Image 1 (cartoon, rainbow, N blue to C red):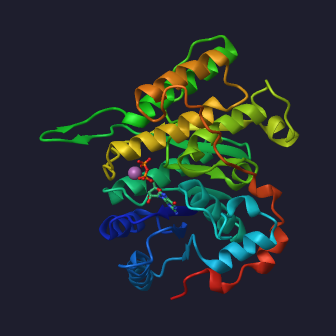
Image 2: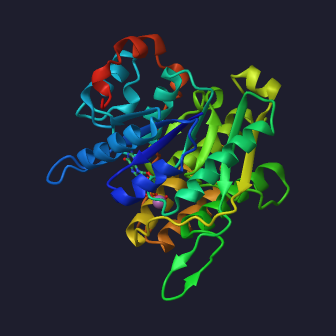
Length: 336
Ligand code: GDP
Ligand code: CO
């Protein structure tokens, strides 16, 4: 299994802890979009990785999302949807994840998992990866996704308070469940992991899913599975339907303690997630109205402002991988 760590200006101490929590047998892939001007955060991250590698002899590869050689390889592979107007990989968490999946494929991995770099508990990271493994062992299908449902998402005010869910998941889960309920005719609250950043997939599944830009990736993955394999819309991948696509939601034993980023960030992530839901062909007009109302109430959009469609990046399976393999050079990676 490859574990991808997307990072953007996170505290170095947290990054170091996250790396140390990843079980030894996994290849670590760090995809950074951290600041390179003023204080060059990437240099600090490189120092951490260098030291970590030296002490643990771990397999670890590292790249910067704005690396020219990386962008060039994507361009050669015809995968230009991931590039921005400056011809570099666009900023965004999803874009970082896609880079990670492509590199996991390059290294011949069967499984790819993600852990956020802003986690305060190295022990929790260790558990997350074990949970991914447990999920994969529960299924015989080559198309598996494991998403973690946090045991608790504590709030640190004067007294710690062990809340069950975060502010974003709470809202996004409502609409994801509504979408399933309305499409099946049976009310359900089954989805607890609409925005689960900590999740994993078989590479076979990861490479056939389209991704939504920015913070909508995790929501869009579920939607894409429902759209492509849910039996309502036509499917193009018969093999996946024959084997079945399994999604596991595993509740962690550890609480999820990560960086508190404030209201603006919460609004941005909620907007990305709900926009993906809104624009799914499985979303009815009634749910669309509810989502719009919710986003107006959270001041993510102005009244009457239409919801823009998230940028959809086509599946990695559609890129010319041979060209990518040929074009990617050692220059795209940080060497130690
Ligand atoms: P939240 O946990 O959903 O509130 O989102 P975070 O802001 O903590 O982001 C989740 C992870 O993605 C963190 O480790 C971030 O550093 C990382 N991240 C956010 N934006 C980007 C990006 O543009 N590129 C990369 N590579 N990572 C990103
Ligand atoms: Co976070």
